[in-house]
Length: 443
Image (cartoon, rainbow, N blue to C red; front, top):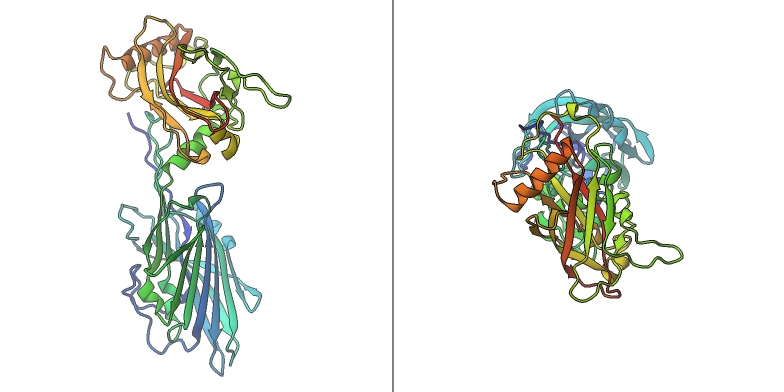
């Protein structure tokens, strides 16, 4: 049984420019009406900063150097916006997020709904496209060669998110920066230079630049320096940004403190690393929703397999649940391997790379699974899924049946045995920062 499918993309997403386009499209075929605007854009300096800690929000700072005619000019300046749903309340926030200044003085813009224009991103966006413009009235003074117009706002990277009632977490996806350049092509003439910089932030080292051509990579930045080229020919800054592992990690890091946590577990381990004056490595650290704390094993004797056991009490109110179905009741386990306090502790301590899961009964069958250990602390974490497409008689079914029964009569106990590790660069001890569980489905 599936729940709601959701798709989130929103807010301003483009250059602004004179609102005189005769055939608006998002791939550059539209052309401004001839001889309507006389002010020239001599130069554009565009600075886009992607997030450094989070995933979605980025900032835009566009600076347009204008050359105005002798008598000055009145311009309707418009910024394309995507609002998502037709009656989306996010429309109310958009005017406040757009900051427009002419020669240092603020200029307000107001929302005007327009006919929807689809974005060509390679997947279906439904109604989420350019369907409104933020429009400002500019009174440009005459005979200026260096009139400065600035545009700043916050925006969100394009991404898809979805949720069903059999998912352990809301669906995750990669991100895309899709910043339209063509609206600024409706000034008179062709700019002498367009200088664009995208600061990659958290996405440094993993960006795929799609357009426009002619970029270079300078450390954590993508840079374009374009001379005497029309912006409707450049069309858009389009960069693909892998983010699924980031999003999985971010959700795991605080899962054990979330309101949706069904039941608190107790935990014990085969051994514990000796505490220092400031830090302990108790197994309870795996359940505190704080990735900067961790359980670390004491040095295990040769031939011994380190283990962790998780135990839950019976349900207090079984009447809140109908009889659990084996293919939807237990989502599984989410492991954040290593000591994720910092890049240094993550590399220095060992990290779990393979586990064997089974009920604590020693005679029960076990489920063997790999744990992804990323080279980055903010991209590590693995979902060990149990619950979809389970076949009878398999280890998954045995574990799942045990957990289902525990919801009704309890107690439940699952042992996680550590069978392989990624060695640390400084310590022999293996660590786990968080272990998050999804133990049932509420119907």
